[in-house]
Length: 397
Image (cartoon, rainbow, N blue to C red; front, top):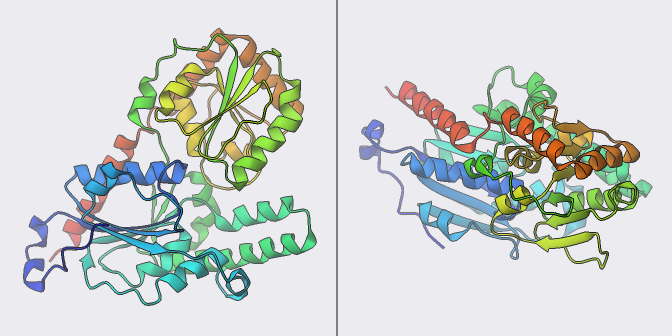
């Protein structure tokens, strides 16, 4: 674990304009194998390339992934804050949502004397730590609307008690989001959908649109390496949201898909073989571009959640047509290669069209690639870097 090299002295602060930006980024959860992790890694690479000094504060369970070695070498400070998942009942009795309460408990005795040019809270659950970190600029990054996400979860819960818990949690997030957005110096939204949902409480706060994107390499994915067998692909770890989505797809959509020799690939941590001939659980892969480039069509059958789905943008950048539910398509640029439907038969029909005609699939995929060509990570973060450095210069006497 890398530690801080000590706070900047006041005598050095007068020469701040000659120093690199000093930025603290606060994150939560595994930093490998998720869309959230992909965004954070792309951001850290861009900040490091700009010469900024980076300090990462990472709330994580003991078994969750830290950044990879490449990212660790870029950091000037890495702080693990281990979150315990015990005492769940007490967490639910708190005024803040359970995950936020667990983070609050971990950081209650945390102290840091360093002063940062900016502190970024990557999500609402880690916002309380920002108040303990001294900075000239406090940024809240809204990856999704937690209020909406938990309302959708409540609608899918089978028992009254579980639905009630989700509804109460949703209201706690609504209160917490309002308070945090009003307290932040800047709020960054990853899509226009979240900005429209929460923008009404940003009257006195600077809001910035910092969209999700895709790696430059995916835009260069070859479209000539398609598998001979018609192949659909789904990417993402086997977490609760993705597991529900795949279960719905496999039981209500997949049986009606033609041609009957088509294969579904499940790519991401945690997927295991099911024994069914038409389903292939590939688990973690080192090169996502190879998997996407060799498939025919991407499926995004998500039933709950909120925020722009990075997996969909990556598929579009790779030149794949996409069949998605309305939830999965939220915030995604419009394109003729994206079919949006919540109807299982309509989903199967659209998927069958692409799996029956590789030429049509390729044409639709090229339309998708063109629709997201402005969403390369390097371009997105270059604009953020310019904006923040300009803001720091303007604030200096």
